[in-house]
Image (cartoon, rainbow, N blue to C red; front, side, top):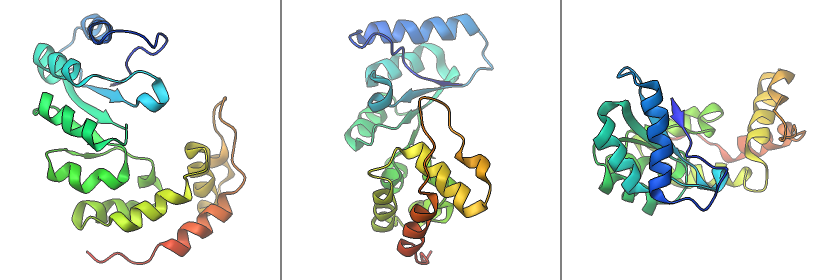
Length: 190
């Protein structure tokens, strides 16, 4: 289970965030559960404090299996690693993959893996950070999910990829984005 912190109220305390997670985990009350805390404050408006992640791991053990850090702030990744070194931490920011793994992270859960899986692999193998930054720049001024889906629609010829849920709106520039990506990508040596 991927768990966002409670995000309706933005001015909550770390203890309140911990209480909200604990209420879910206690409500499920099943040792088979494997929860990954989701730190994406730029979207949810509320982050997962590193001490909260550490306390939940200590309290629930393997039930709190991991944390996905999508903050794109590598200092935050380091704070999670320092606070809870036995927590399986993944990053969402693709340019951080290689250094996160080098510093004890377990990998990535990321959007660009859908369209440049070979580059994600290269990030793990050789750290192809300049190419990854170039790919990210293609999406810098676009709503990411609709743009990513538009690229998938353009590459596969399946218009179904254009569907997004409100409040997102479908992007219509998939072919242009795909062409821009293709011009950036050259073979990455392993």
